[in-house]
Image (cartoon, rainbow, N blue to C red; front, side):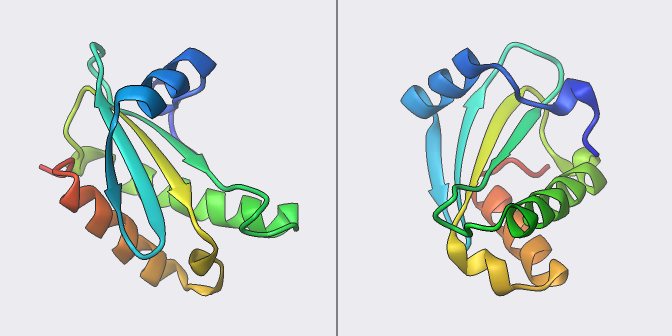
Length: 113
């Protein structure tokens, strides 16, 4: 589980990122990032009902992605807000494939040191 200081939770922060964040895409994810004024980077994972109607599948995928982020926190640049939107292709992927794709899209966003 991500530490509290690395979680993005407030609706106004989501709105700000959605409005003026930079977008990056991969086969499984859409990522928006925005510089913040905090010392930590904050992350959020969004999986719409369109991906799967089953909450069990969405929650499992969300837990896997959060764990990938937690294990790699030391590799990320500081002071960024990051929102990952997951698309339905991620549902049938293994943990290793998801991890590879998450790190790939965050590297593309120049968020990894």
